[in-house]
Length: 93
Image 1 (cartoon, rainbow, N blue to C red):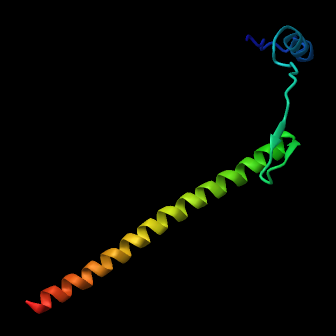
Image 2 (image 1 turned 90 degrees about the horizontal axis):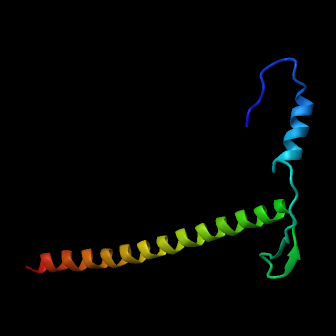
Image 3 (image 1 turned 90 degrees about the vertical axis):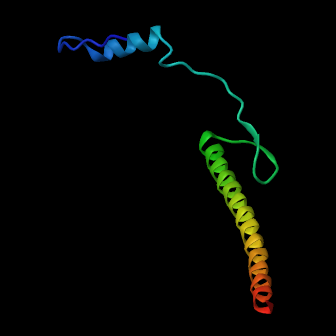
């Protein structure tokens, strides 16, 4: 795309020409039916879709982190038990 830098060029005409001859301004029909977080289908606008997606991602990341934390805590519990058993074993020698 070439944009003239001259002051004598009417930018409104240039923009109208670009909109008419290129895909800069083109409308597309899209179906925004989706199943929401509540499990019900609905027609939503882009803002609602992005908002629900952010809520979904936040919940997903939170669940994944909680799962990993639980695994680490279980492992720590096992290691604490092994440490107690090992220290008792060392005392008996």
